Length: 359
Image 1 (tube, rainbow, N blue to C red):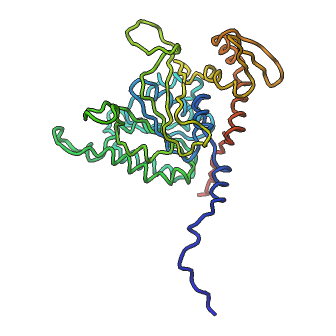
Image 2: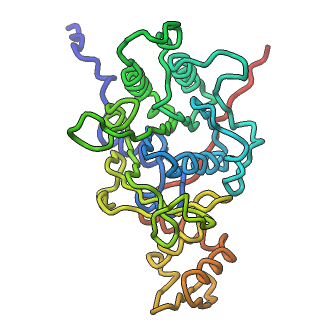
Image 3: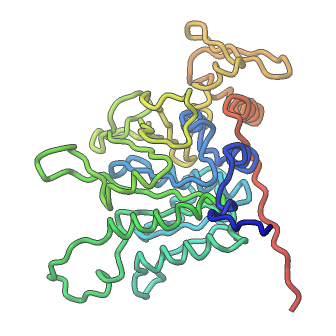
């Protein structure tokens, strides 16, 4: 008796066990800094589309460059779509240890004297690169969604022409088209978006420029709705005449599909940025170390215990930060191992092996 042909293609389905096993075994994370890593459950996982949206001059570009630096240190390719054409050597030097000569750091932008690249061309280039085995696990930064110019707008020579802004649709379509590709290639997309004032007179006083649908297409949303503070918790003022050494970002993570259920979404995270360094790792570590058991606070005293049993004390937060910096390599390993144990994550990235074909 002839066997009946199946009406449903069973190869289209996967078991829940296979999916969970694949997520745990094949995904590695890109760290940012102790504060945000703790908030995100270990850092940014591969296969994620991350949206960073803040007000102007809050530190989002510095934060993005810190992610770039950490991804390069892991051996990943980084493709930076500098749509605003504001990336400069000054920003490179703002990140401690940033290797701007790394051949895996590729900048996608219009060359001097040449026409601007349309959003359509930039997005097609990124999508094509994702499909290449060479760029598996790569980080793509879009700076910014707000400044993307659709091709039809770019080619329109009539400045006074009244047309509907198609930027939000172009951005949303890009995220939809690469969503599954990001996951299957273990890529990471970090997009920057600006908050602008809502002039409609109703609703939220701040609205994201470049499309509200980006939030629904993203896996992780990081936002700052407040102006930056100095390290003492006071609002920054450009006219107060004080010399600023850094700033404090109060960040929220209102949306995270990858979030572990035991990580609070509502509690804000304090991210310290230090001019000339990027994320002020030692200061953020001061807030995380008590959880690891390697530091205890008694009044104004900070008591440290190194893994080898060595003990030392510091009176006051400033001196404690100096001691952490002096033993940075030790404490970096302590916090890394703590996150690995707590969140069951991996920071080991294995660059794809590309076999050379004989001509």
